[in-house]
Each structure stands twice: as C-alpha cells, then as structure tokens.
Amino acid sequence: MAAKRIAKTAINWAAFSDSVPAAQKDFFRAFKGKSDTFVSRVHQYPENLPKIDFALYKSRLANPAMVEQFEKTYGGLQISYPKDKRNVLGEIDAQEKQSGVSTDQFIQDSKKAIENAKATLAHLEKLPPYEELTMEHIQDYFPEQALDPVNKPTFYPHTPDAQPTNPHFIK
Image 1 (cartoon, rainbow, N blue to C red):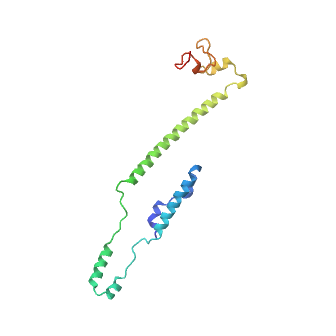
Image 2: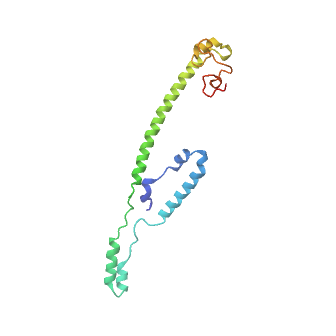
C-alpha cells in the first residue's frame, strides 16, 4: 500500500554498493541505514486518510450539524506532496547531466591517453635491448633528452639544476 508512494525512487542497493570505494564502505552503510529507517517510517503510515464513520457520531452526539461540518472539513482535506520551492530536483538533474558530460569527456581523454601510451610502448619495443644501447643510439632515438657535447655541452651530473644556464645555479 505505501510502496506505491516511493516505488519511483527505489534504489538498486547492490549496484550502488559495488560502485562505492572500499574506504567509504562505512559511510555507505550509515547512509543505507538512514534510508532504511526513513522507508520503514513511511511504510508504517497508511497511504490514504482513515475512513471515519460519521453516521455513528451523528447518532451519538446531540448536535449533528457539528458532525456534518467536521465531515465536510475532513472530506475536503487534501494533503499535497511538498513543493520543491528551491528547485533542488532541477539542480540535481542539471548536476547529473553535467557529470555525464564530464564523465564522457574523461572517458574520451582516457582513451586518447591509452592510445598515446600504446604508441609509446610500440615505439619503445622497437628499441634495442637496454644492455645493447650506446650513446649514439640514445642520440638517435631520443635527441631531445640525449647529451650532445658538441652542440649543447653540459656539466656533470648533467642535470638541469647543475647547469650554469639555470637561474638557481650556485657559482
């Protein structure tokens, strides 16, 4: 009977639990406990107002006009679902759409990064084994990172911090 009121907002707790990180399982359990408490409170009340036997009251009370007035008032009583004055549901829907867009963008960026990583791995697999690399190989394969004593001489230990062109170089 009360299930009709909240059937549209039913949550698949098993799927939700699978997507919760291990570090936040305790928070999830607390949230689920609060939700279950709320749902059980909603279910303890009837879906509709209880029926009152006004004929019984008319026969027992001295003033039946007062009972008729109560009956009209009770029959006209409408308790509506609360209105969303601050448009919270609209904000949540907008956030859901925005997160969907950002998630799609993240997935696309991740796929591009994976493709770049695969291309880099394919390039690295073409290299000779590390034990067989010489300085000439490094100069050929990685010209931007290789030491070039003729065109770009550097000082030992050949790191950017140890070079005189570094503004923090101590003389």
